Amino acid sequence: MPGSKVFLPQAIPAPVLAAVISIIATRLFNLLMLVLLFRSDTGGTLSEILRLSLLPDYRLLFMLMGGVFLFEAGSVLMLLRGSYHWRTLFICCQCLVLLLILFRGRGEGLSCLPGIDPADSHHFVRHILLQKIPDLLIILLLCVPASSRAFFRRVPGPAAGHGEQER
Image 1 (cartoon, rainbow, N blue to C red):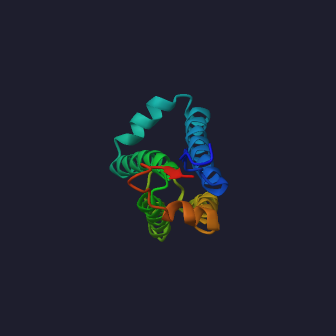
Image 2: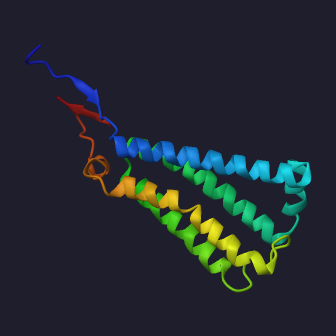
């Protein structure tokens, strides 16, 4: 009817949806690569992870990886809701991980971990940094397009409810 009010859910822009799908895909792919790496080298994933988790440096690394993985899983849900603060937290988390890789990879950082050859530590850091390129593209998808910026700037009105707009 011409005079009636219709409430429609806020549409998620294509760049935000592409970024969220990319976050999920890259994290699942990284998890799959980790499982396949342990399985192909040692013959047993769980036993190798348990053996490495007894070493203090690896225990901290596993806890950090688990925390980042859980944080990113939660931030994906909040990015779909259009939360500006969670977008900022996601970007800060990625910057923190990048800084940890850069500072831990310098000098004796990675070569002090058991199982990493000191001669190959620079190659290892370079390989990890190359894996951060998709995260940079995800950040660009969340920040650069005008539709993404508008999606994260919107404030739901009290009459329409969260995530709804009046038409």
